Image 1 (cartoon, one colour):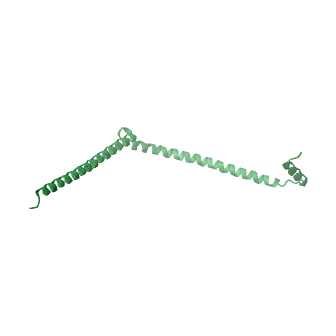
Image 2 (cartoon, rainbow, N blue to C red; image 1 turned 60 degrees about the horizontal axis):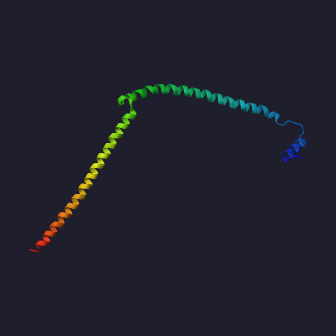
Image 3 (cartoon, rainbow, N blue to C red; image 1 turned 45 degrees about the horizontal axis):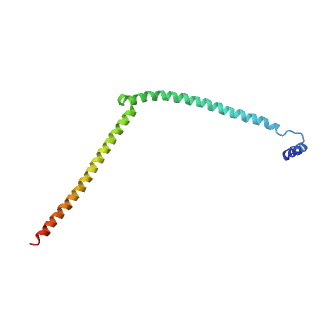
Length: 130
């Protein structure tokens, strides 16, 4: 029993006249492979040049980074940042305390005023008209 694929292959063999029509394209294929290989080689060379240039630049930047780090106490920028974060947190807590205190004073001040006004009105009511 033959498969459909086998039938197609047999039919193609019967129709083939023996001429290899792909032969003239083989040179083109090899030329394309050589061109792609050349491009890859050039890219590798360019990449190596870029790596060398970046490495040289980073060495210069390393000296700059050491100068920057030298500006922090104990050459510790993370500790410096954490210190400032703690100072900011303390300032926020202090601000919240004072805002809360002002709210409480205003609340009890208003209650005191309303109480005083009520007592004054009650006393005036008890005295009667003049």
